[in-house]
Length: 382
Image 1 (cartoon, rainbow, N blue to C red):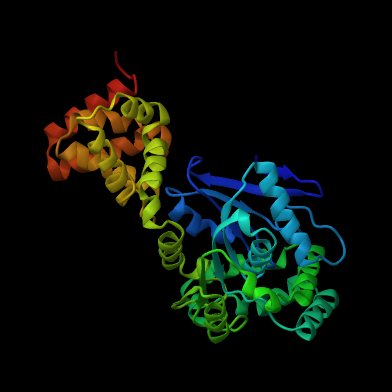
Image 2: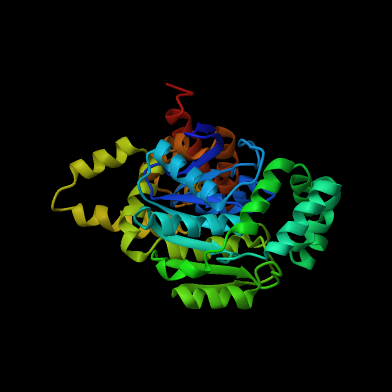
């Protein structure tokens, strides 16, 4: 459901990942939308049920007139989770999104498994600073201010290395609903959770871009120390490290949000995603004392291991698996994984290219047999 109606407004929501995996909610900064998490979400899709949404006043979500409070944003998150039927989730929030995550964890600690806070603090900026920002926006407009404001988002090298992306994010900020931007600035102006930090209970990691001037590394490090959280700098990044260094952020989040104790559950979720729930349930039901340990072994150490590492998305890992099974050859497993392409987005055109590549490096006979197996599975011949 791309749009979800809560008790107060309609939010734009995007779902991805594994529907049976632990839920992870992303919360974005002011002046952006859920797309700032695209690369990280792709990296983590094999291991989590991912929920991204445009905060009120941003993207395609409703943008009510007037000031917004942090409590409004926290209530939006609570209402959304109620509608989606999630009692407990992990949260990953950047800047304003991180402040919302803190507020939600303080208000409903029983609903938060783990907390990842990126480039955020219990108090971001000053009342005077946000009041001045709002006055500038009202006077000159976001379209005029965006090229200057965007300089705080990214490290200087990003603009030289990724000029087209920097231009696109400038456009995103410039086209943000001005009423929504002003409302969220009001929330940042008024929000101060400093006195409540001792009540932040969930296991937490704090990440900060090493070049961030909005929530500086020293301040984020001190914040992490106060709440007993893990802390890590993200090199070559400023205020939006999930955009500048998505792989570094993904690795940190995966390691923190997916502790070793959940490896079996994680592997089972990914195995069901790729091979299909019916196949996995059948294999589990047919297990005996002879092979039950083996079924657990492959679930935990294959599906909960390399298949769940992130960095490569599920489709890419499936292409690699298909190539290896073709080259070895492992015909029974190849047939199984060709059938599983229905679940991973691998197309017949992709299979053709994999088998052609294998023909060059592993031999024509194995590729020829792979084509025959694929044609049979895809029912292109009797």
